[in-house]
Image 1 (tube, helix red, strand yellow):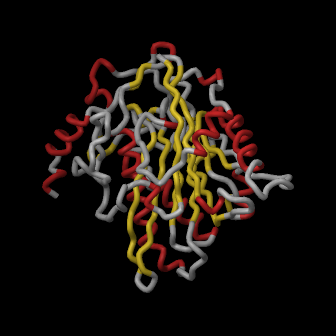
Image 2: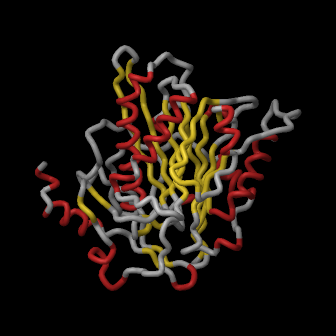
Image 3: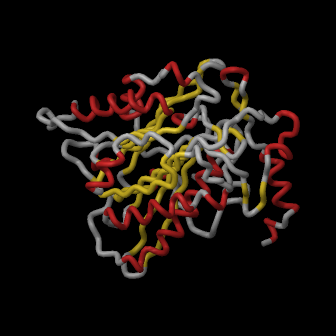
Length: 352
């Protein structure tokens, strides 16, 4: 279940009573609560030299020859290298799984994803593929110039993708990231949404967090200076990006999914993003259900659910991350959860 302790002993925001909003999560409170979505991850930790990896979001519908799903993209700030973005926008669809990795490995990951798709039975005569690969820059903690991600790593992430609860924190594409002054990582959350006349749908979010700002939990700011004191790594760069992937099973079309993706980026604000110049903030939204007839006026509950899930996914990416020592003597410390709880308690959060 979503409130179980992870193996590291770190705790999800919901377990601490600090989950944003009032929405109800799915069984795992991760993106795989959306039917037909799987996630696979490969993590590379090598001493202090490497902290990087691959996270693969694999919708069943595009894991077959000729498979496509409606999709939308919102670019909050375009300081990034989102492979496949223009065709995704032009055609309003994805035709491959979505990969996340480190900046300079994005292009090797894209090539490996093309190989994966071309090898699918039924694709023997395919001559064009639009791989979708997002990235954030993990060069503060990892030897990014070595471009360590290989085709084997990508294929392992894709072929190991499952509907098991998503591993969070310093894993996959979040292994070497930092966010809001602390160690970042991979986060995920979901919401069940009741739509009058349309039944219950699920929206799920996966976040790769690597951006600047002031961590804000239930309206309470938590800065590295006050939480960590003299151990703060003052060399950390500003910006550096956030990738958000949203899945839904509401039968939305690409235009509606673009609106949903927009709200996903909005969901970064309540947890403290400063949307800095150097931050590539992207959200991709796709839908796994057959086309429906939900009017735009009926999207409001989905908009709210997505923003809540993004905020919770970001918090979980930090709350489950662990202190990481990287290249050039750099270190990013995990946010101290006891400090967060005590500050929130002093602010009356638990009495609201």
